[in-house]
Length: 114
Length: 355
Image (cartoon, rainbow over all chains, first blue to last red; front, top):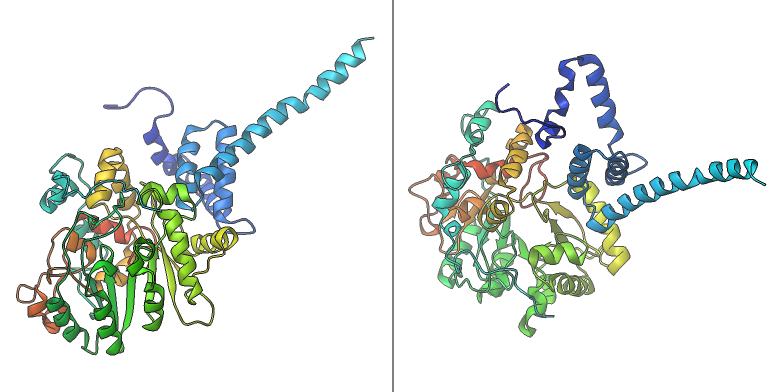
């Protein structure tokens, strides 16, 4: 194909997300209906959900999602401080998840040592 | 606190974008950018409108001057302290004659900082004496700018003026980045002064509305949700009350166009507007019930067409001195690529969302 940029994670690919239905329409449509419903105002506001999504985007290290939810958070009225705090939640969780496993390591070490 | 200006006007800098013809060429892919987007007029046709016509002119909007105490980085008027254009008393008197027409229900005064026009107070009194609803688009900081403006809240209250004020965000960083250092602090003080005379307070009958427009190259979110957030944050942080929040999309002209080009966001932003085109906004576009008058008396379909010097398509009624309600109600509205700004998502007007 002409003009196709090589490599992974091309920013313009984000715009093509909706086209995943091309290969499997029924499941793709179900996913997008579900996705759209999840992000509407509910017990949590759409802005709070966008901030959660931004945190997950960082913990999952998805550049598409980071771009998409940075824009979405701005549009929904979140500010830089709130967005950075959301990323710190992701970072703290990542660190916590690693460190809580230390209890496994410590238990195992204690079992094997005098 | 004195405001530190973000910039000078495009005109004062003799920037190419101060030429409206050049701006239109950029928007149509003929200058600076070769990117073209589907023609807005074609989108309107596809939405089922052969041409866009007014419903009935009921809002008389005047831009009474480009002089302003701020130089906001997104200003579509290219207003600022270095601009001197102000509507004369003679033209304002002519406007009052027309405003008396029974179909005109609302007078919407904007600028610049309209309060800096020496005829401002006389004009407000003349309009309220006719029993018309008067909206004043106040930038807030003008109330704090000089002693002679400190009594504006009392003046507005006395004449039951609907005060509509820009506050792009409830934090200093975002507000000052768009409007100049010191603007947020002065805006909060001005809001306190307006609240003190009853504006925004339940049962006072004094309407204080705020305007949110994005502080960058992104589209605004849901109006109701943003209003809830603004109300809660302004109350909690500063004990400020207001009535409604109007969410307005930034139109890609003048200094906002300059920002989009300089930040290399132009294509992305235009594409966002085009992708978000919503045919259901067309019925309620503000150009259908509004006539916009420039400081020099020329007539336009809206404030944005005014800033692009796109006069009404009614050759015999293009100036306030030749105002003909029948001819103007039959005109076709002048469209161009910037119109995508009013039809994106939930739509945008001087009164916020339109769907």
